[in-house]
Amino acid sequence: MTEKPFSVNDALRHARHDFLNQMQLIKMNMDLARLDEAREVIASYTERCKVFYELSKLQLPKTSEWLQTANWRFPGFKVEVGTEITMPYKTEMDVSIRDSLELFTKFLEPKLNPYFEHELRVWIESTENLFRLTVEANGKWELGDDFLMKTQGLTITHECKTTEKWRFHIEESKEG
Image (cartoon, rainbow, N blue to C red):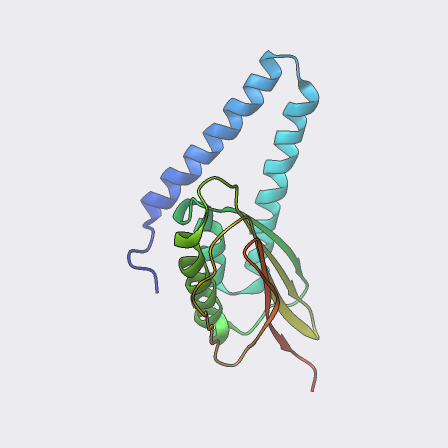
């Protein structure tokens, strides 16, 4: 669904850039004798890395790639990802999940108010009995058009849809 996928070179360039930014932030805090702030930057960066390692347990490579590159591809959002993964999910649903995330983000990004910060939080829970991917966008945007998202084989439930918060779940129960 993406027009031009990231090449390995693009991904490495962005990853190095992000890493150097984090190192500069740590160095700046250390130079200013703000050791607690430097430790917080290290802890935050470490936590983000752990989340992306956790994604490999999900066995959804296209969805994982989308989540890892979303901050670079959609600069209007600060994308945060959280996980609770004890069981992998159906690989055949990978493209459908990725396409749903892409469709939603491409729909909302041009409607963002440029004077506000926007967050896109994605929480993934995959256990023996449940698969749920929760998406929550926070910020300020226009909602003029009706937006329908279809995901074959999965259920999409909108919990909240306003001009400042949009929260929905992509899920499937693994029970009977």
